[in-house]
Length: 334
Image (cartoon, rainbow, N blue to C red; front, side, top):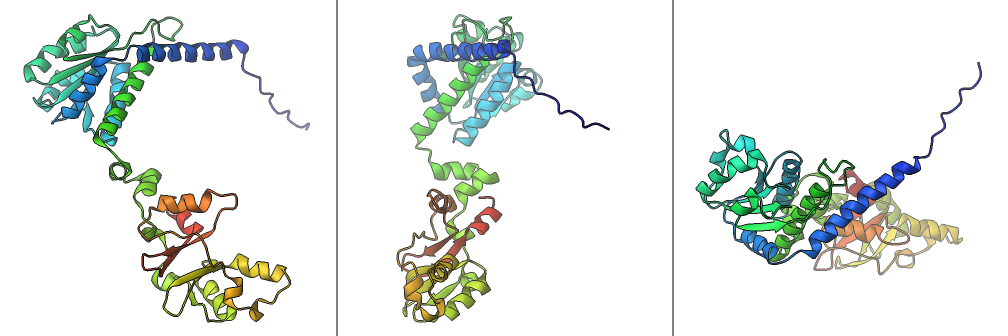
């Protein structure tokens, strides 16, 4: 039986690439037009959002509803409590979720969808403030709003000018811009972000401290400066850390010896057992503190031409508090 020929991959048709570029150009153009029109209503919207003492409720119909969900998630993760509410569900019991101190951010390109239009009188009756994000500043939605974020859309990227494309991209970008403006206004920092993202790799990078991942106590390889290299090798091997912190008679950290340092001595034709620890150790290694973030330890180890495999941890009293091994970081998903 002859060998099967491998299928030949055909290059994308030039027409497809041209269409992709056209779509991106159309959406970029829409974003530029919105940016050019940014003014006082946007500042008013940020002030209203910052002053909200209740929830920020995002709503929209169809694709705008999907965008509303994403913006609500971004708001919540960056310090602005927000939820998504479907207009139809609101009309069938969900209205009880809305209180006077809440603020509604309603998204609708035309501002004339039946579902949103039906909801508006009930929102006003609740006394909640309303921000409209729409391409039609004369729409029913805009007229009912306390602030109108005008997002002019000349055309959708869809070749039929029907499917929400440019309009949803613009709405998403404006939502991101509002969230970031609120972060700045509230001085929302890395620690705040970490508290809102405790799970996953991102949460670990932000919330874990060096003290959470370092080898300490009996697992921390430490050797006195006046000990012999044989004792040093035993400690490195027994703790399986690839290195050992070196301390003086008072227990203060004075250097680091890695198995690489010992191999280098051998490669240079020297007998490690005839050397003192002082002769093979690095007296000025890079260190971190126990209360540093684990993310900083990762950066210190990786952001260099020759990454470190081990990193000594020294406390504020200058003592060898622990040792971080690259495998420990990987085991914690860092």
